[in-house]
Image 1 (cartoon, rainbow, N blue to C red):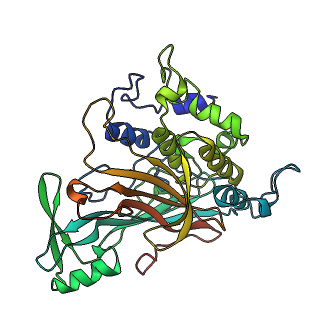
Image 2 (spheres, rainbow, N blue to C red):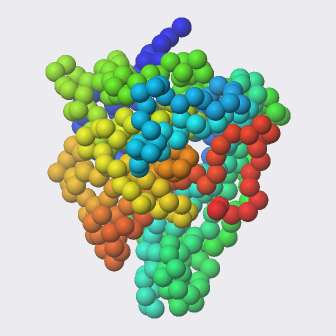
Image 3 (cartoon, rainbow, N blue to C red):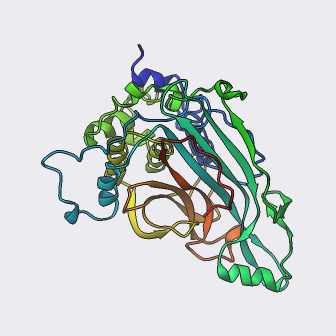
Length: 384
C-alpha cells in the first residue's frame, strides 16, 4: 500500500515543478486544485482569483472515523485552558470536536464589488453561491449535496442605505476585469446531486478523504507539531518527487502564503480533531504567519484569524499589485471550528480606491457544519 506521501505526490500539478517561476494566481489556484475533486458544476463569473474550498461531497470526500465520543485531551503536560488564548485556545477546544455518522457543510462564497452611482458609490457581495455537501463516514454510505446561486447584497448598513438612495435597483452592472457583468437580486433554485448508491449520478460513495485517502491513512498524520510541520513543509516528496530542486531550502518553496493555503485546504473538510488542532498550532508557529484577534467574518461571527499578507509583487515578475490585501483563516475560539477564509484589503487602489482598509474583497465561509447521525438535507432559508 502506498504511504501518504506517495498518495499526495501523485496529485501534484505540473505547475508546481520546482522552478518557482509562477505567478501568485497560478500557484494558489493550482495548489488548491491538487486537493479538490469534482463536484456539481456551478456558474462562476469571477474576475479575479478564487480560492475554492476542498471538495468533500464528491469523489475523494474527506471524513474521519465514526465515534460518538469526544476525544480525550492531550497528555499530562498539556497547558491548562486558563493559560491559553486566541489560536492556541481554539486549537485546544478543537480537540473536543465530536464526530458522527454523517458530516455536512453549508458553504457560502462571494466576491465584493464597488457599484458606481450618481447618488453615491456602494459595495455589494455578488456572484455568490451556496454549496451544501454531506458525506457518510463509511465507504458505501453515500454522499450528496446541492448548490444554488445567491443574490447580490450590500456589504454593510451604510452600503444598504446608499443602495436605497440609488433607487434599490434589482439589477446592477459592475466591472469585472475587462468587461461589465450584470448582478441580480434573486436566489436561485437548489440543484441537487447524490451518489449512484442512492440513485444519483455521482461515482463517489463516501468514506474517503481528500485525494482518495482512507481513514487509516489520514489518521497516520502526526499530531506532534514539529513532526507535522516537517511532513508538510520540508518533505521533498510531499507534493511530488521534485518539490524542491537540489540546494533549495523549504522556505524557498513554501512561502507563508503557500503554507497557509496548504493548511487551509486540509482544514476545509472534517479531520481527526487532534490533527486539526495540530495544524492550527503549526501555522501559528510559522514565520510570516501572524495571529489577529477580534476578527468578524462576513456572516457576523466573531473569531480569531491566522493571516498572511499577499506579496506586493506578482511572483516571477516585477509587476506590482495595484492594491494590498491579506488572506485570513478564521476560527471560532469557543469551539475550535474552522469558519472559512476571507481576503481583506490592506492598501486601497485601482478598483478598490474608494474603499477603506478592512474591506472584504472575497470570502468562502461555512455557515453551518458538523456531524449528525441522520442524513443531512439542504437548508430552506438563506445563509445565517
